[in-house]
Image 1 (cartoon, one colour):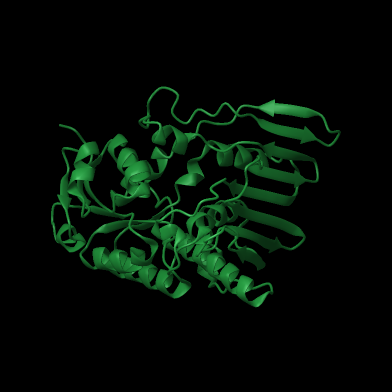
Image 2: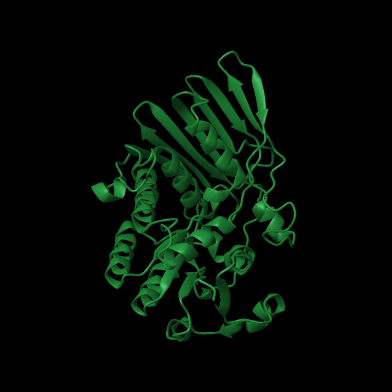
Amino acid sequence: MSDSPTPLRVALVGYGYAGKTFHAPLIRSVPGLVLDTVVSRDAGKVHVDLPDVSVLADAGAAFADPQLDVVVIASPNETHAPLARAALEAGKHVVVDKPFALDLAEARELAALAEREHRVLSVFQNRRWDSDFLGVRQLIHAGRLGKVTHFESHIDRFRPQVRARWREQAGAGSGLWYDLGPHLVDQALCLFGVPDRVLANLAIQRDGGEACDWAHVVLEYGERRVILHAGMLVAGHSPRFIVHGTQGSLVKPNGDPQEAQLLAGMQPGDSGWGEDTDELRLYDSHGELERMVAPHGDQRRYYAALRDAVHGLGPNPVTPPQAVSVMAVIEAAMLSASQGRAIVPMLRTTEREAWPGL
């Protein structure tokens, strides 16, 4: 007789870019998870990729299904909080794609509800398991840079044409800061915890743009400065990470390959999955260069940890207090950009202390 826990049956709400590109293939590649149901109004689109899943047009019908254990919400940002609330109230464990919510109040409400319902609530911060971030984190924690004084994290792209999709149109939760900001902020908080102050500048730079498509945010930690940057008009190359410290500097030129691999049709776990051929460049105090192989990235580790957390076999990979504190920094940046001054993230002690190992 096997002692393995019963596989968890998963419902995926939304089959747009995030649901199709990330969630569906990652869920299906993790032992112990079964992608049972997709909530979408386009069953034909879903069945082209996933002929064996059930497709429902109504999320409520999925939440009411007693056979489903976990609900993954990959719908437009403004629907995250209400759908998560409904799923929790239906007794489901819940994964929410980033951003967790639209504001700090919504985020705290969901965290409190999950605690009352004794359900696992987690946010899909898959980029904690990217090769570039894993390599940078490893070298910082090993003390190879000494005390970090300057940290830059860039996600830059060249997309001069505004596309007809909700992420680039005016509306609640749209724009580049809500899209990429949660990844940038979460990685920074994993390394350094909650900042003292947030100073942000947001802009719309493209012709015909309706939502933020350029973001430059500075997190202040005493004398340390953490710069988070994203833009849509970068035709050249910006290094993914630049880190300076009292004993050296580190540059990671290119980002993790997993998104590109998924878009090219590679399945998680295939030969070469997460293998990053772009080396880390470490410069010592004398300017001598050491090239280092980046660790393998593997975003499946998020869902494997989520599976274990639901079974009570391990910690939640991204806890509600962590998600709330990321939301506080996102909101502080919005306020800073509108008021032209640095903002202190308004967090409770338990939320500030949500980051272990700092």
